[in-house]
Structure formats: C-alpha cells, structure tokens
Image 1 (spheres, rainbow, N blue to C red):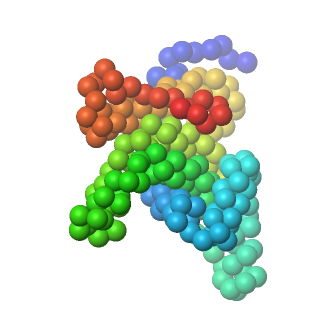
Image 2: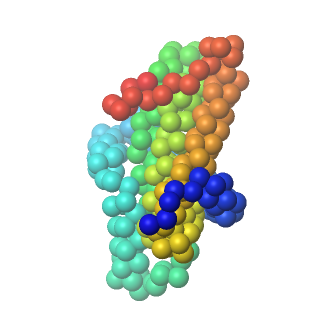
Length: 244
C-alpha cells in the first residue's frame, strides 16, 4: 500500500475539472425541468380539485420516500423496457445524461413543489384580491404581486434544495455517466485503488467550493430581492426535519 501523498490532491484536480461541466449540466437540466414539474404540483395542490390535490400529494409522498439511487436505477433500467413493451421503441442509445435528468427531475420536483406551495401561501392573499379589485387581471396580479413576494420567501429553501441536488447528482456515475465523480473513479482505477483517499479529498475540495458558491449566490439574491442590508441577508440552513 502506497503512503498518503498530499501533493497528489493538487495534482489530480486539473484532471477532474474538465468534467465539472457535466456535473453542472446535470444540475442545470434538473433545475429547469424539476422546477417546471414542481410548479405544476404546487399549483395542483393550491388551486386544483380534490382529486388533483390527492394525486399531487400522493406523488410527493411516494417520491420523497424513494432513495435517489433507486429512482436512478428504475429509470435507467426500467424506462427502456417500458418504451420497448408499450411503443416498440428502442431508447437504449439515449445519452446517459437524459436518464439522469429524468430521474432527478422526478426527485427534485417533490421537495421543490412544497417549497413553492408554502412560499405562495405565506404571502397574504388579500394583496391578490386588492390587485384584482383595482383592475389588474388575475394573471397580472399573480405575476407582479404574489409571485415576486413568494420568490423571496422561497429563496433560502430553494438554495438548500439546489445544494442537496448537486450532491445527490454525484450518483450519476453509477450508471456510467462520466462527471466529476465518474472521472474520479476512473483515476482511482488507473492507480489500482492506491490513490483513492487523495482523489476523494480532491473531489471534496471541488464540491466544497461549489457549495460555497451556491450559498453565496442565494445569499446575494435574497439580499438583492428582499431589500435587506447585507448583515441581515444571511443563509438559513434547513434542519433535518425540513424546518428553516
């Protein structure tokens, strides 16, 4: 067994960084599609009929009880079989990142819908009624009065959800996607496991910088859109139970 070599940590980082774009693509795609699906789920719970509300809640409950790696494997192995059986369509040639986007979109939509729903309900609905009463259309009242305030309320929890997504997205390597973690695994294999600790420490440093960057971005956005002085626009980490 080779002795621990701290210099290898810094030496391996340049080999890992080119694959940062893949990790960021996973996060960006999931954020876009997951937010759209989460918005639909939130709208269903807030303004949908009884059946729609029940279906949305059932989906959220089921998905939040599903481990990310289980969802990833279900989509990666199950979706091609489903398309072949139902539509006689072979989708095995799809890029692996598509399966990752589908998996984490389904996962991300559940918690983010609760963030959207609770943030919307936190805004006094009387403001919406007042806006409509003075001549704004329901769409204008929602976009200009309710949505802008709800977005500020949602920012801290949304930021925490993004950080969790970024870390959970590292599981993408388990289906063969070569992102940061996937490249790290390849480097460890090349060295026959001898530099595993150094490689994982290098990955830890990269994820630490990414997490701090996301944290600072959402702290800035919270300050920018809430009008609070910088000393008051602080980061609000989520406790294990989900409370801020």
